[in-house]
Amino acid sequence: MKSIKKSKDIFKKVSTLIEEARKKVALTINEEMIVLYWNVGKIIKEAIIKNIRAEYGKQIVQSLAAQLVLRYGRGFSKRNLWYMVQLYENFPILQSVIGEFKNLSWTHIISLLPLKDALKRNFYSTLCQKELWNTRTLKDRMDSMLYERTALSKLPGKTIENQLRGLKEEDKMTTDMVFRDPYVLDFLELQDTFSEKDLEQAILNALEKFIMEFGQDFFFVARQKRIIIDNEDYYIDLLFYHRKLKCFVVIDLKLGKFKAEYKGQMELYLKYLEKNEMAKDENLPIGIILCSEKGKEKIELLFSPVDKIKVSEYLTNLPSKKMLAEKLSKAVKSAQLKLPRGE
Image 1 (tube, one colour):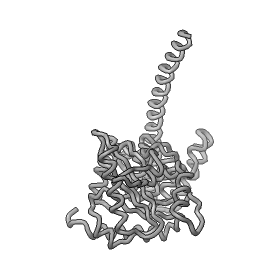
Image 2 (cartoon, one colour):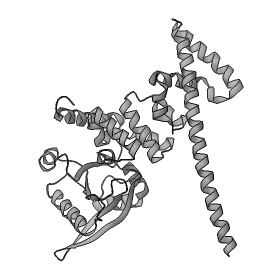
Image 3 (cartoon, one colour):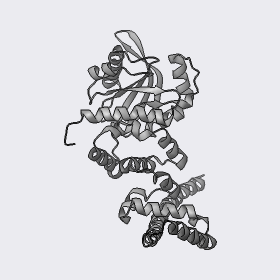
Image 4 (spheres, helix red, strand yellow):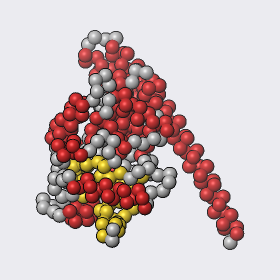
């Protein structure tokens, strides 16, 4: 028995060494690949610039791709060569592209290259690396306009840069990155008419996807958590814990439009958790009230920017990108008008 245990211990140690070495090798290979593709893009771009004929670029890439694919495989197809040119065009300085993409695969990079907004691209590349998204998850997040739905996207550019740098370098997550508005719950497959209980049950049935919409640092704690205050029973719909924010997150599900009394109810839950559940090294709990529609004027009157309660709309079916973009554009413009001048 001792020899078996000893063997398992040795296996564990050796496995750890192998896995760590593999990660280091993968990162080194990935960085070398980025350098190679950037240099290929640079050579092609410079060759095209030297010739004034527009068709020349297409001809040179097509001819070059045919030769490279024959010798080095499909990784140097015509389509990929154009992506390499695009990589160089977007990042004329080599170190900047390595700094942003060094832990990402080429398929991740290809998905991110069309994003012209540098802050948006940085947001997705940073979250990709921190939350280990595969390319399908990345595309899903981009299609649901995750960046535009975060509080982060409404902040001044410099603030966004600083918060993303903090996440990259210090693993520091802020509430602006975590909370979305609206939350897209299209995966719930609800009928046209449903009750709060139906919504809650649907969320719980698809809990894994629901947590993914929040981010991988959310952990499920309880459903319908019973608390007793003044000998009265109260029930918290959903209780989560966020690892990086180091706090409880209460979710209250409401079927209709936001009502002022919802805030008082949430404040009661948060004060209870602060008094009875919060550990000394944890931060104050945060509440999310999920409504099918927000009352804009009520929200402005009841909530301050630093409030620990967030009110978000939920969309049970993802609208068209155009409709969602228009809705979010209005929200961004409204937020920008409220910013002090000079930021």
